[in-house]
Length: 124
Image (tube, rainbow, N blue to C red):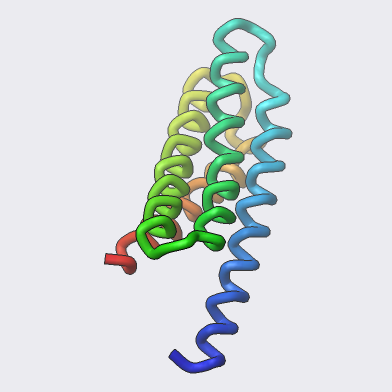
């Protein structure tokens, strides 16, 4: 691996860390729009946990002590992106928030899932 490839990987990691952090903030803001009912609070909690966990685990992956640790954290990020997508779909089906108000989060959850799935597959 050349020096330029290492810098590219570091830059990619930095960009993806920022992207997952931006997604987390967006999810926190979106969850604030959910109804203050028992059901709404459950979904708010689940979505906030999964949406913020993507970036937290990716950050830990970038500081992993071994390839196995890195792979494990990437798989968790992938799983949390999938779970976030699921909760967003539930919110949409419940008609708690209109599609126009959460389209960016839905698209980003899908893109993050694709990215982490791809990273995970390339580790094998």
